[in-house]
Amino acid sequence: MAEESKLRLVYVETEARAEMQKSTNFIPLGVLAFFTGWFVMQTELVGARSLTPYFGNSIFVWGSVIAVFLLALAVGYGVGGRMTRRWSFCWVPAAALAAAGGLVAASVGYQDSLNAYLASGRMDVRWGALLASVVLYAPAMILAGMIAPFLVHLATSTHTEAGNRAGTLYAVSTVGSFAGSLVTAFTLIPAYSLNGVALGGGAMAVAAAIVCAISVSLRRMTGTVLSMVFCLAFLIFVLQTPHRFESSQQEVYQRTLIGERLSDAPPSTLAQRLAESQRLADAELKKYMKKSGSQTLLSIETPYQRVQVTQEGEIRFLTFGEAGHKIPQTSMNLRDITHHSTEYTGLMMAPILYKPDAKRVLLIGLGGGDIARGIETCYPNIQMDVVEIDPAVVSIAQRYFFWKPSRNVTVYTMDGRSFVSTQIARNQPPYDWIILDAFDDQFVPFHMTTVEFCSVLQRALSPDGVVAVNTWINHDLYSYQARTLQKVFPFVDAYFGHRSGNVILVAQNNAKGPMTPYRALAVRKRIKLPPMAAVDLKYITSCLLAKPNWNPKGDILTDTWAPVERLLSVK
Image (cartoon, rainbow, N blue to C red; front, side):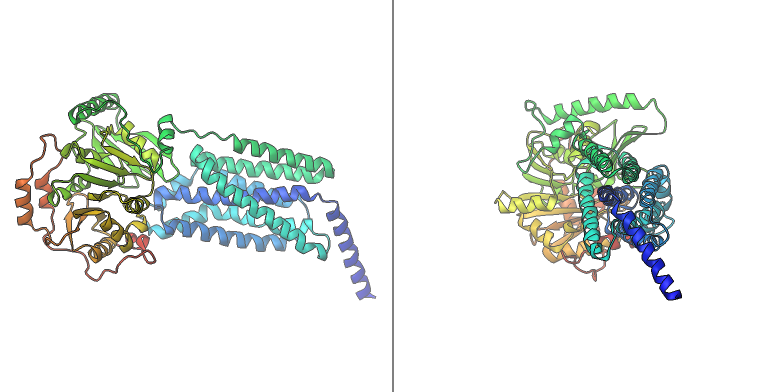
């Protein structure tokens, strides 16, 4: 009798739950699944992006974010599954999504302080990025993970429907993740600040949770209409998202592989362009010298990085990442814009010692235009191609660092390796110099360090051309890059910046032998440059290392093995 009563009770409970679930409107549950998937992927992209200014755009950051999200979601799935045994209410998953959205929105208020604290040298960058990911996003993702088991539980009334309903819900959620990824990456981040996208994502999650909770409690038709109206309103908002770029930036973004000559004005002499740039710099100096302390003139999120322009006194800085936590990419003294305030940009003129009669130059990585301007002061009529992957940087170099190139300079906004490969495929004339300045102290695009890329560079060089690469002596990556260049080029020399720690590796495409201090001195005496040339050959020759100081046992970097992030973290 006891067993029969127990079975009857289970049957009654099952029937009651089935009746309740039959009356549950599936459409709002599907909408909730869609926006949960959207919210998770949007938060993941924004999270990785928010860590980049402090920990670098490396595999460590992405690995930390992805690992934390996956583990937190797994915990949420388990917790949510157990909770369905006690609660069968539609407001529970809605409340979980609303709480997750609230946590992400709240993190905007303290994420910069937390990231700055963890990135200030207290721990290895890998553990800093991992800990920041846990603190900022794990709680929200645990709540988001709890939603899926509840939705399946609420949508399923019989065992025969379980597979169909579960598959449908997971498919809808994955479509939401797909849409959230594309819209966030292609539309929201380029159009708004990261904090704005994070706040908007949190608000979207809260709104979707409220609408779906109300829709489930209404009559079937009314709830369906309310859910669809909310989805339509959200779609209209996404389609109407403005791309808030300055007109000058917008024009740069539209440039293609054809290249763009930035100077459309009538041809002018180098002296005239430099005088105009200095006049603009003098005006800026008067404007900002009255203010004390560091001033932020520009801070924007581009599709590639955070770019900041700051000024302290008469020095203006360009930083890729969070100013104060990264080494400035460019520094310029407004009193003399041709002076190389950043030591390594002056050392990047070392190719003059190897090929003083250069006619054609490729510069990969524009920055503030300091190197490009220096080259033009030495060779006013030189043909120069500049490759910069971030179009916003081109606009910033012109607007804030007064770079005014001649009509012989062509800018390409694309990846440096892709550009060189394309030039070879098109049988374009070779370059006398190739200057590679696409790295910073925390981020190195690995595909531009490998032996395969060095081979591509060699094919793009003239028979006696040279390649100059900027790197750092206090990282293991230095030895690996030097050994990789040696694998392709006959001789590799090093110029050490005593003040900055930068090392400029110069690889020769001929077999004349390594540069020696005596040979450098003899070449320097023969070189004739214009009076306005912004180069200090005496200082460059003094930085030449007579003997290579890199580890001869360093492995060769390849397209299939280039752990640049690990090498950058080892000093």
